[in-house]
Length: 294
Image (cartoon, rainbow, N blue to C red; front, side, top):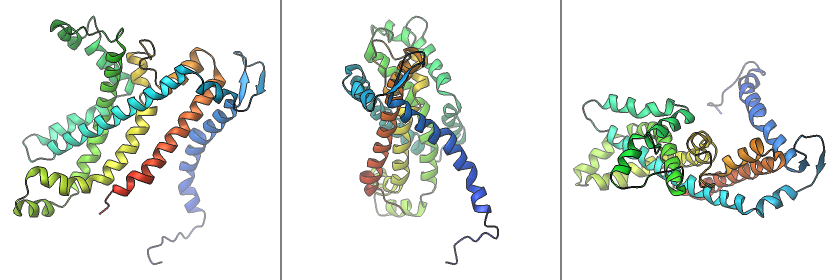
């Protein structure tokens, strides 16, 4: 009871949490409620006539092979982005945490990509891999690899994953580096005195102590792959070629803002929101059991 904070003014706690409550209500609760409302309606393209249709929009979605294809693609894409970004972030953090000359410079350079907007990062990769003017694209073509992601769906998906991973690695690097620097050096030194090698020290001591950070990043990277990769997809491939990179997030944009299927787009946004909530709940329910907090 002695550690419980006491406020002399009863209104002060409510004033302190008010900004967060207002932001959540304006930017999440209100848009989510509007999406649910629009998902059970069917309107003409101009919004002049609207009628209640219940779950008909959801039934149409799950009988659409193109939508089911975007669901499968989203799972593949998010798994690839999350695993690659977390692995690369951990690798760079371990390397930057070593006592080497110029370590601060490396750390600063590794953090820079996080400051870029997703669309700007995608444009950088566009200049590297564009089939006609891209430096890396021309190098690949020079060694006999027929690189043209505007025609090859596999290459387009690879490029979008690569750009998304590169953008997210900095975020993971910051958290892993902070986690590594919080590990007591006495534990590592004691293990080395006992004769443990570098790999044994990492997998038996360091990585178990990083599991809370890894679990947090797994949740954040999954959400990032589902929601925040829209800019990279739009700038690089616009969902093509042949819907090869049209994830759930990008498809609801195309249906809502280009094809004017407002109610179908609203139903897709509700499905995407429920899916991310379920994925996060599953991660907390099953994966968190393997997390070791110190």
